[in-house]
Length: 144
Image (cartoon, rainbow, N blue to C red; front, side):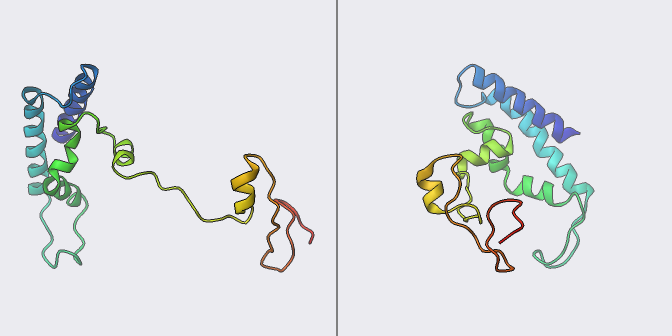
């Protein structure tokens, strides 16, 4: 609950800073919820002890990995507090850091000539061969 409250406060401050066209959340506003978040992470780590063993091969208890991540990558987790161009929600933030990957694999109903030059809604000119060796004429076609 403490971490949730701290993050909600930081996200609220982020929205206020964006509305004022600030580059970052002012330090006086940012520091108390950051401090609360840091202590919530430490409390979470203290409440779920680490399972002994090799780090990469020992499965930890549920609730241990997220506080470890927040502790070890605090600057990444709270990056939105220092740069208002970074969104606090994960999906939007990652799109800014890493471009959205689009599928480049060809499907059975597309070919370069149809998808590149015919435009949207064009029917493919290539007719794929099904696993049974019959030529399919389109979705739902049963004859060869």
